[in-house]
Image (cartoon, rainbow over all chains, first blue to last red; front, side):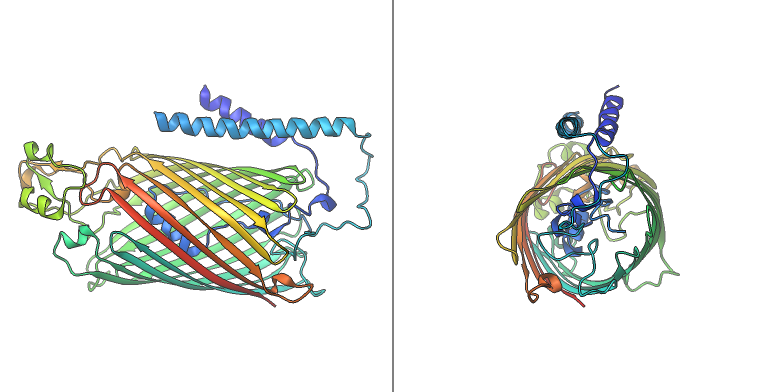
Length: 67
Length: 428
């Protein structure tokens, strides 16, 4: 039940937001907002060795929406 | 249980924050005049490009050209208190056309590893040195609201060959305010022993990975996302070099955490079996991601919850706060915290009555035991390009330190480590 509640909240949070137009995306396109993988290869390797967990590397930032 | 509660609490808090922000945004919209039937035209002075710096991979190409080429080089240097050091030089390149939606990329790196950890010393083995070569190629094409990307990777050491590939589909909805991704990957690893051909001795490990995720633009400065990963591993991934000490039952119960190599050598049974892990592992992770941009600062925050069929549970929190000191100079503090429990079969000291009574599953891999790691540091980014093209030449340097506590391991109970990286990126 708790997991279902969390999932529902997460799903709601993805649908209840405002609508950002293409010309309002200046901040979203900033270099610090759009990097898909902020850690470099050496840093990623350290985490892969130090931590017994995987995942979390996927990203889908909307960026500038310029095409 | 406490881990699970903490993870659930973090996800709940993240969802609540997003809901609250969305509610504020909706209220703002409610106060505004009714939206026209057609999307309003952009103000003449506004463009969809970044106003605070040159565009990047996702931005509009500079110099009036739609094709951008970038090359970068990075060197990473790692050292820790268990006498392990790694030097990682890498080069990468990208050619892309952001407006047409295509891009190709590649990276090649070398890991030069030197280790003399207590585990190695305890087996009277010489210091261990290894060079790993790794590379990947990627392609993406997203001409409109739908896109596809594919990548292939390989990694090679004399005793380990890894080949993997994958593809990802992207769908943008709600005028690019909601992005969905679905991905699949497959990997095939061959595990051997240095100096022995794979044809004489090798094991294989296959893995399938599935990714599902959604990213939502909440307002003009906030993006959130939730991403799920499932990795199904099949094969024997036991290390062919890792010997596990075993003890008589009454002795095993008295082996303390952090017991020295001498204590272990004087207490263990003569039998010294190799590591043996389960032959399959199902791993699952869900990650919440937040990116917020203010006037001259950016917050990036990730929270990952993890569980697997070996009984491990983990929580990883990562945050960076970028501060634009000037148009050319950005600095950021970075913090990371990781905590996990041990695998079901993890034991500080395995007990046995003899060679015919060895534990079926056994490991000496501290990363399969309970631990926590706290890391902190930061970085700086200096744009060295000319006026109007500041990001055509960028120098980035990061320095992070980590403290890891192993609460239930022999030889080592804590580890201090540091990672320094420095790199340059050139845009043509």
